[in-house]
Image (tube, rainbow over all chains, first blue to last red; front, side):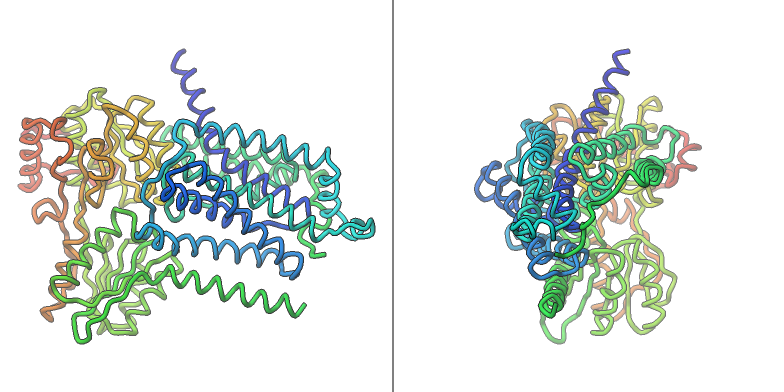
Length: 287
Length: 342
């Protein structure tokens, strides 16, 4: 009996650990897409956050500074995407892909500059036992973003930009600026998700450690119907299946099937819910 | 609109330039000298494991043979072909493909350039101008498993692999059999991270294995293994067994030993042959006998590994070299493995 309880505890804690970076990145996706900017660059923003957190935490010896730097790095990439997608009307998919390439290549390059060795950084001060703070903060961020989007005038403006930026402009407001700010906030969240991976859960950066989480987060955004709580739920759902996959390996169910299961479930859910799931009308459309 | 086009081009160029930077790790030149090119696997330099070990062999050739070396890092499987092509165009004396994933690309390259010498690690490529260097990982893993079974207090040990592929199953099967050689009742748990790069996954799985009673984990998972090493640091009485390179110093006292795969020995040996204008071709298998595979010397764990255990390990090693024990290299062979009295 005790055993069953401990297995449940283990899966719950593993699910939270797995879901946390996805939650941050999915929230980042929600705010930028609700403002009308598709964010393919989540992966790159997470990489930027993960690397910068380590690069600052190491030399300064302060993990808090590292995390703040990770957030700023993500935000800068968000700002970059925001400007490209609005002022320069660059195709958002291309711009996001470019950001991924720059961040991943740049981190690999900067790793050698900062730590003098390729592949993986040296060990740096990390949150260690206090990493639950970032897990809790992920949920708080979801609630905060919900409040921001649905209960503030600015949130209304963000959502309007995603549906009909012309109406926003007609009301005498600047939809471009709103989009840039929204994507920048998103970048900060994704950067924080990356920092959780490198100095929250671990104490180093290694190339490839983000491992596609930015793209899984994109799926969580859609599965969660572009809402903060929905995306958070989807991230937990994906995290749960990853945790189960870890715990149940070699118990008869093929690993690959376990890994594919949440995405199959997401596809089925989305296909079965057509009509009720709708992206923001102006999502991906430059104003 | 024009702006947008310019910006896209600029962005793409910048991205390409950055990617290029990451690719070319280093070049040194000494004209007329032996020239060696190396293409790393996606794990890349800095894995403190497989690719770094190959790189060590290359550096040894640089310092001892005066070789001019160039390392090209692969960020994805799509990089193998162009990375192999570049040194081929420069007619290097020997070009190394580090990792079995490159076998198809190397085969094509070798057939297209029959005068160029190539060497591949961990795969057999059947071309007259290729040296295929493989290792008897199951032998070293067998020793690691035997040691783990002797040191374990919970009689539960674990294997943590990167990807679940035949190469890694050699480690898994050898390790499990080695443990059963000491005590058939040893519980050997097996998990795969599904990646050689996801350090987070490595840590979570190691946590999970330690929490479920294992006190020693053999982590053969590249950079994901770095996460497992991170996990063991805060756990008294638990150990990781490292892999490929000597990882003992990454967490002194917490890495029981490392099963070292001397990729550097294979690299250096082929470099030497190339230097003497007698390049190696065909299949070279390195094992315990030629020190191609070995356990490290317990530098930080002398208090945990007793002289009696070391003696037992030496006896097992001798029995493997003499052919009395044949460590299994697949799960099928593992199923029929019977401990041998020595």
